[in-house]
Image (cartoon, rainbow, N blue to C red):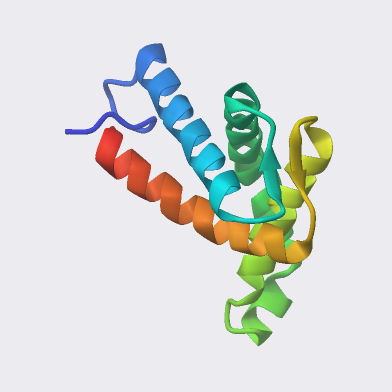
Length: 123
């Protein structure tokens, strides 16, 4: 059974492994999406932590504030919301750059797919 941060047998080692795989997902995303740049693996790992923190704290607030727009667009606005969270993280972290909104939106989609795939395969 895979060890995830919400399982009962959670430890710092499993958290570090989960975090490193998330960093690899950010690094792979930077290689796939043009305009989505990470200066190195250490920066990718820090970016993964920042994105996770922003998704835990900032994303729910933004989701509630934009709920009417999300309902009007039948959920498509969530792609823009995810891209906005990535752009905010990129603006705060040196070595992590997202050049355009399209890069942020496509980067959020690719990052979700890569993260899910790598976590499924490696953890």
